[in-house]
Image 1 (tube, rainbow over the protein chains, first blue to last red):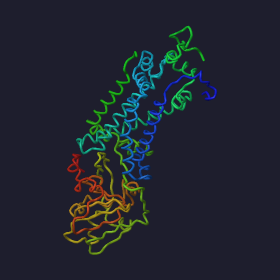
Image 2: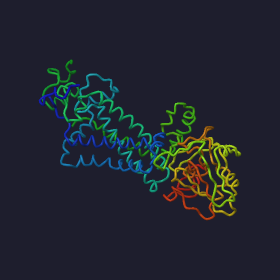
Image 3: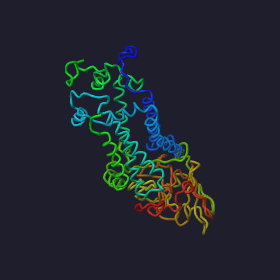
Image 4: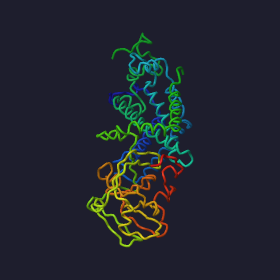
Length: 224
Length: 233
């Protein structure tokens, strides 16, 4: 990790703009409330400790229903270009990404674009999870309008996906904690150029026009 | 941008799985319970109880869990009776015990199989106080100060309606409604009022209970109310 003061402006690459940072942290805040209220509703000893079931359930439902709006605002606002470009980058897996996927993360010398394929999977999973949690949550909340079996089925999906989501989010946080430079990308919007060159070589080349490993365009990155 | 839209496939795949889960999840949940519940019941660590299989969920409607020690606990039967009685937990334990192993079915869909209940038939308590003939039924109050339930006299006098003080052979914990709670076997869980404090015999139809005024059925027969078709207990 490099301290901020040691990285002069010319040695930085802009990674996310202000709107993207806001989107990430608003989402993080909503997820934090959802996880906290879910834990209170679901884990017996916590339920017993906190009580106020009606209030907690209301908070959980309202926060859940709020989830799509930051995403919609990011997509429709005047600040959308960076967001749209990043969504596109996240959705597509190029040859390197797929090689990494097929090797289950063991492939060496994989050259990364702006996002690591693991980040891409995380983004896709989180979006899918938001859609499914909203749909199943809506059935659980407005159960009167749906067949009875759907309510049980929706509860089943909501419960298991919540557990999976908790594991994935813990993994996301663990990865972030292990890389201070990458973390700075999401807290301040920029990363040290040297980090991009080492860890996101194709993105580095796009951004700077320099080869990440001089003389060996497609080869492995230079030794550290 | 080159590359395959793997991200879109992940999202669509999850949506497809989600729809399948909504449509067939109740069967999958049932199957899982049959397979996992016997294992989970032998899990001493309680870790498995974190997973959504065959587990009780603790619902309270008040701000905190109101607990009462076994010594301080009192159960009163009053209202339209010959002599109001107030019983301690020891008094309850001294009465003839009813034991049954029956499922607990919640109206939100979860079911805990083969729960071992021990308690006193509500009918015996009504006889002890001398509930007036021809009364409409009972109004049940919890010492949480908020939750209430009602049963007609025919329902209250059933053999499978007990004031339970043991669950799986151990004292009913505060989270599960101890020191003593009602267990109405043939009805959805919300009828089985926790932290039972007062049984009030009512000559006229009693004011509906906590969830009933919020839209749930008063005659909460499992499989024949609230629009559900669960297997009866």
